[in-house]
Length: 118
Image (cartoon, rainbow, N blue to C red; front, side, top):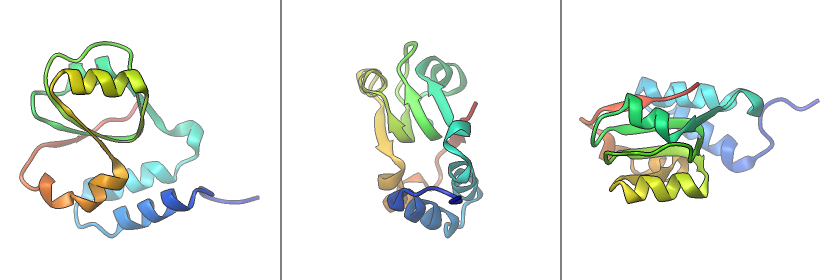
């Protein structure tokens, strides 16, 4: 029986996140280490309800496209459904994978970063 993800890219991402100095990235790494069935699946309406304009929302899982988004936000997630991507971009927001976010962590300094999970 194997432990942890067999996805090499995900393992590297988790290792990189654990090395960061911000507690939120370590928390994201812990969430990603959980079994796949326990990962977050967040709908757009939830992001709309619990965020403000120009917030950075981190989802340690998948963003789904149910609902509407009426303000621009930057959403960082492991993956996105196609409708979710379209709705985020249509509202003027940005979509960023966790893989890309780990390379651009300096852009997040001084901004409000919120972790969303179920």
